[in-house]
Length: 380
Image (cartoon, rainbow, N blue to C red; front, side):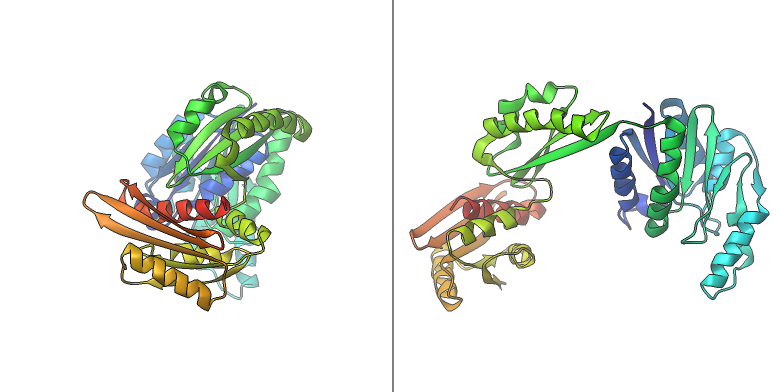
């Protein structure tokens, strides 16, 4: 089975000016096709460094996919870089120039002379027509390896990946395997506690089990590789069942399920509704609840941070105003090198308050606080 590598090209990515969403999309597309991805690299708009990355990739991967650097300007050097890496020249393809001019006419525009650069590809390349943009893609076959150059515009890259590149890869490499994942979400527990219970499962080879820690939440990912969808599910299911048995109530959901959805579902099951007051969380908790379906009666964001007793009084008054059975108050208080998170939960069964220290990076305190507060709600 061939292994793949992704090279995203763009100085703006290296400088942090834009997020590299292309690599995420390509990684998921390769996973769905059953192709192992072992390397991801980002290179700036420099032909020499791109060529060096290509040479390294060819030594260790069978499928190399680049994205970006196929535009008409001087800082779009991918064509020249791939040619340099392989020791060939670029050549002008009249049919590509015709396609580019046709695209421009369709858009009601006239190409400038520098757009002719996009009709050049490395010698021997298989040109791939771009039907949704002006930058043709191309494929260089080097023995059993394939170097695939895609444009950096996400819409164009995604279209070409689905409609041209994946069919090409399936045909050339006779792909039959599938890779499937299942992600279990936990809250109210630390990564080390989970690892202590499932460390033997983390040593499995197929499926594999891995942890991804976030502030106040840990994901447990199961990944299986098989010859068919059915076989992949047969590998995933017993491992998931074992994880659920060992982790129990720490697990709140799976895959796309969110903690706020689960929390509001629990409120709804009790025939109740929820109102929230937050202080020091920048409105994060309220925004998450507003976006989720369920019996949320509204929230209020305090710019000041009232003391714990005042927070309890405020949430009690607010929930009565909103005619909600459940009131949740959350506040973050600086406390030297750490921060204290105060939680107040009011239900028809009474009032509960908690103060929990948070010693992590201050910028993650809000996420830690709302995950812990929603964990309280989902355990009503």
